[in-house]
Length: 169
Image 1 (cartoon, rainbow, N blue to C red):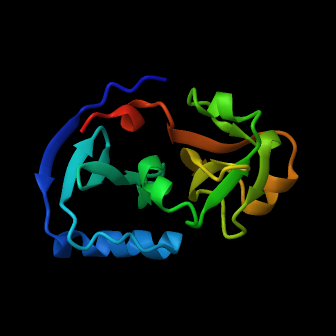
Image 2: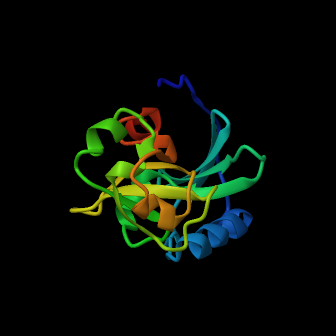
């Protein structure tokens, strides 16, 4: 599942210019990004818009199938905010598949943030260490993700080991 996307239009931005975007992200995930005094940049990465904090891609702005824009942390962003909302926990059997970009099947899901609804952008973490593994679109609500035994629960879009994760900035 290789994407040959390149970073384009990388430019510094003032905090006040992206404050609404960052506030939306902080409220959605119930976190504090703590970017005061940081060097902020924006760039285009394929169809996504990235926010770089001190030269590290910390957030992305993406569109869903209905062209609604969402802002969400990247996996590097979740490394610093492992208490963020919209999480789904998987067992160790799911990890090798997720690391190759596979969609997340509900058989491996052991827990989920109760606020997750169909169509939400969610992050997947391992149940033991709470480390981020992937980001994707929920195809079920939290109750179905944890109770069902068959089917695709999350359509993966960014995972550990993909081009964005490995990006040299």
